[in-house]
Image (cartoon, rainbow, N blue to C red; front, side):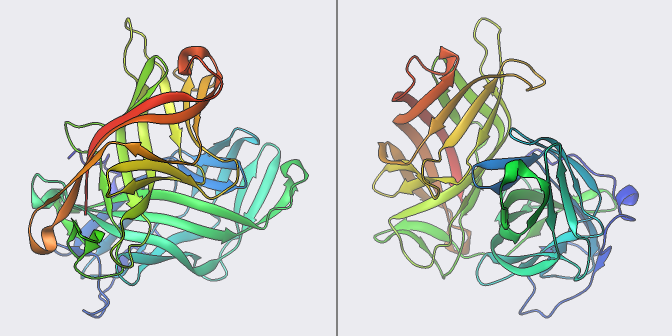
Length: 390
C-alpha cells in the first residue's frame, strides 16, 4: 500500500481543535493503534457538498492531525480555509471559522458526524455567485469508521473515515435564486498512525464478511463493507474510444443489517486519466452524484440513483488544468449487467469478499466530443477490476 503524503504533524498540531484524544471505556473504544502514544494523520481528497444537482468539490478538505494515547471512539479534523469549485457557481472558499468535523463511532461500523464544537462558526461556503452558511450541528447519521487491511505489513493497516451526512444549511446570497435548506456532504479520509516517524497500524474491530446462501453475510450485524481497488487489478471504465483508470478507488456499502443478495456501494475515485492512445492522455473525474454502484450476488451489477434523472458522471477534460470539458458520460439507473464474480477469502473475523468485475454493457449517454461515444444515448461500456471487501 502507498501510504498517504505525510502532513507534518508538528506544523499542523497548532491548528487541530483537539490535539490529544484521551482514553475511552473499553466497551466504547473503536480506533486502536499498535503502539501508544500514536500520531494519527489523514488527508481527504475531492470532498463534495451537494444541493440538488449542483455540487461544490473541495480538492483538499480539512484533514486530521492528532495524538491518541489510548483507544478512542472520536476523531476530529482541524479548522482552516480551503479552496473548492462548482460548475454552476464557480470558484469558492470553505471557511471553517473555528468549526471542525468529528466522527463518533456507533453501532457496527456506523458513526455519527458532527460539526462542532457547539456554538462555533458558522462555517461559510462562499462562491462567486452563491454564499452558504453551515452552523454547528451533531448526531448526523450515515458516516463510518472502517478498517483498510492493506495486505503488506500490519504496521501499514489504516482506517477509512467516511462522511455521508445531511447538513442543515442556508443561502446567504446569490445561488441563482434557489432556496437551500440542506447540503449533502460526502468524503473520505485515510487515517494512518506513526510513533516517532515510524508507521504503526490503526484498526477498528469489524466482523468477518462473506458470501453465503443469503448473499452478502457477516458474523454479526449491522456492519458496513468497504475496500479499495486491488493492487495489480486496477478498476477500468471504457468510455467510447478511451479507457479511464484511477490511481485511487474506494468503495463503501450501505448498512448491511442482515443477509442480503444485493448491496449498494458509494464510490470515490482520485487521480483519474485515460490510458494513452498514440501517446495522448486526458485527465478525468468520476462523480457518483446521488448514485451508487449496486452489486448482486447472482453475478451482476448496476447503478442506483436517489434523485430523479440523475446519473453517475465520467468527465474527460481536454487539458491538464481540467478547465475545459471534452466530453461527459452519464450512467443512469440500471441493473442486471454481467458479469461479477465473488469469493470468500481469509478465515473467521478476518474473512472478506473478493469481487471480480467484468461487467459488459453498462449503458450511458454522452455529451460533448464523440471521444466519449458515437451516440448521444445508449452507448455501451465495460467496467473491469478487482476489490476485496471487509
